[in-house]
Every structure is written in structure tokens, then in C-alpha cells.
Image 1 (cartoon, one colour):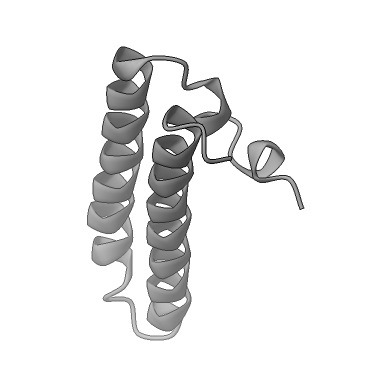
Image 2 (cartoon, rainbow, N blue to C red):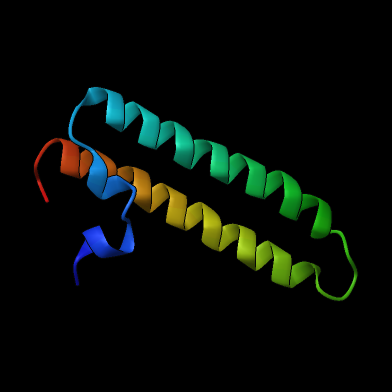
Length: 76
């Protein structure tokens, strides 16, 4: 499994500015998704689905940030 294919934005990290931009983008996506899905999560019947989707987005953004850091330090 190639992590560069799963996290293409993290694979573009070459220097510290790209790393900071990648981390900020992942943070913004996670925050915006939490706000939007938090509002939709209060719906009665499909709230659990939006909560699950928010959790998956948080995991993806967290792993993307970790992969970006590992690529920056040339571990991957």
C-alpha cells in the first residue's frame, strides 16, 4: 500500500513551507467539516451517519498530517 497515492497532497511536501501549508489545509478541512457536520448531526434520523462521516474526515486529516510530516523527514 502506497501512502502517497492515498494522501496525494501530503506527497507534495518538499520543504518547510509546503509542510506548513499542508498542515494548515488539513486543519482547515477538519474544522470546517466538524462545523458543518456538527450542525447536520443534530438531525434525528441521519445524525449518526453525519457523526460517522465527521469522524472519518478527522481520521483522514490526522493521518494526512502525519504522512506529510513523515515525508518531510524522509521516513517514507
